[in-house]
Image (tube, rainbow, N blue to C red; front, side, top):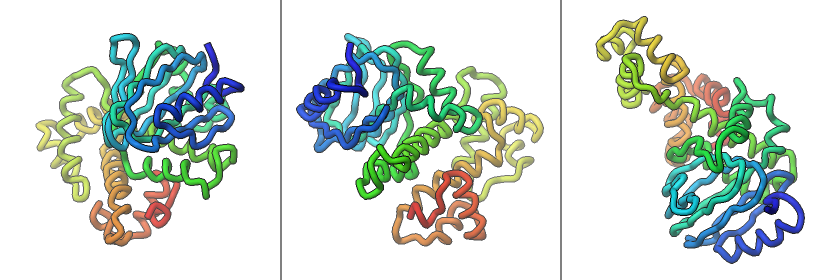
Length: 293
């Protein structure tokens, strides 16, 4: 068994990755990220002993994770996945894939164990320690803020990952992905989760001009008190918090449209005042809309 992050093993790993159509963009203490130069079809064995978190964005094609004949996880075009692994004995199968790979060693995460809000990094570290060979934390469609942070990590003008700025960009990206995954529903289907699911579907269509709680409860065939309880129980956030989350996610996508001003984006997602929208966006993502734009 060899190390993915230390010593002479890195040189052999680099040669293997380049031969497979990947390009090592940068290496730091506990961080490795790779970009594909062109759509790649290859199999990359992962036999290193390091515990790590893995974040992968697939621009095109797909990547499949397998152990012998068992498929452990799969990420398709337009998706971003977060995984953990504590014993590498599996393979990555690149199928016409073009994308971005970020490998984060456990000792890198240890530096930030107290940074994440409500212990997000602690939970990720716990999954890394307790799960088996490979654990899929979550696979979701790419959002604009994740793409923005990936662009900053790979942009050489921003400095390498050896700089504090580069390391902090990685932590920002990890915290952002973990924050999105916290909004996933619990697995157990109950009466409360059914009510919350009905409310969620309505809010996802009407978040720019959402119904008041009483009206939403009536449309979900319940009362306001039970609706708020059901939503909090299922999604670990309030209805207002979820509306704001939906608005910020839509805004992060619209801000990449050059023809729209910040004021127009604010209006489209339900805010009358641009300044108020900008403050909420900064509170959610740590950057102002003008920076993303």
